[in-house]
Every structure is written in C-alpha cells, then in structure tokens.
Length: 220
Image 1 (cartoon, rainbow, N blue to C red):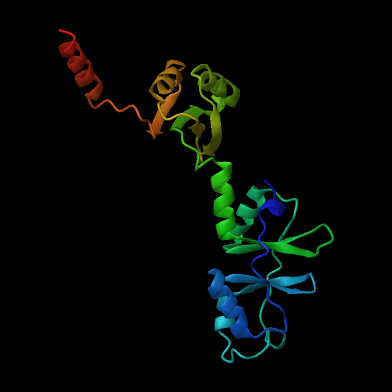
Image 2 (cartoon, rainbow, N blue to C red):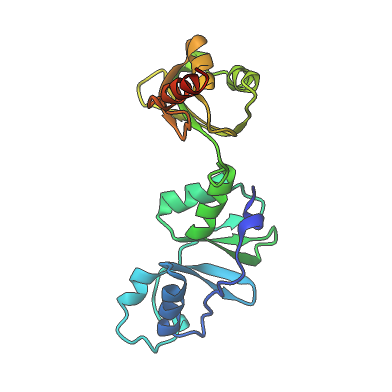
C-alpha cells in the first residue's frame, strides 16, 4: 500500500493568509497537532500546535509570525511503512504527501495510518493468531507457510520482530481460521516454539467430553 492510496483531501491545509486562531481551530477540528501550510499547491512546511500556542495574539496571520515550519513529507509513491517511520521518528500526527513535482497532494493523518495498518495486518478479518519464537537460522516463512497450508489454512498477515543482542526472532502469524489447535500441534511437531495463541475457538473446558457422554446416554 502506497501513500497516494491513503491520503485524505478532507483536511484542508493552512494558508499563510490564515490566522493563528484559524490554524488552531483546524487542528482541534481534526484532532491533530500538526497541519501543513500550503499556498497554491506549494508545500511550505508543517506547522506544530505547540508553536502556535506560544503566540499571544491569535488574530495575527501565519505569514506574520516567526515559527519553525518542519520540512517533513513523503512522496505519493512512498510505502505505508515509510509513512509510519516518519510519524514515529518525528512524533507527528500527520504527514503531508507530495507528487513527483513536489506539489501538495494531500495529507495522511495518524487515523489514516491506523486504518491502513489494520488492513495490512488483516485486523478486521476473522482468524487465529500464533506467535512463534525461532532462531534466525530457522527463519523460513516458506516452510511455515507450507505447514499452515497443509492444515487447510492460509496466512493473512505476518510480522517478524527481532531482539537486541539475541539470535532469536518472534514471528506473529494471522491465519484465516479460528480453530487452530491442530495447526499449533503441527508447528510444534516441526519443533517450532509456540509462545502465544489467540482467538482459538477450541478451548479444552470439558464441554466436548460432557457432550459425548450425553450422546452416549441418549443411545443407551
């Protein structure tokens, strides 16, 4: 997924002829602490709420105040991961998007990112989650996928997390079914260490045994 696919044109950027108060109102309206300053598709920089709050006269125009405009943006062909990295590194609440001619194309808010990441990781899709801990020498997603597919399941999304000063990796799998007891057993049979399991609908609470006993009673 690329930046141009998740930009929002509903959030109108600030102009240099706007007042400080209008900029603050716009930020409050969209629950953002950063807004782009744009004049006729020319991106001038990113304005921070904290800088505006230090200005006493809120009726003064943006062009007449001395504030630092952050030159932070991504191009429209940037991957979603690059957008997340910029948001995290600079602690932003929104990232401006420019086209290849450096014209302003739109804004990606932190809410846009949350929605896109949820789509990338199939958060809204039903399914079980399995967390494996493996050695980095055994990091074969192809082999893991074969085990999953042999259990008549598919991997909807996966994520690999490394640990500092360690050769161990944590692999999180989201699969397309919630009854994953047999899949967990298959992974363990191939010597994969299953750390955590979520959304497994088969819970060993004795209900199946009681049901079988009841059916046997009816057949007597």
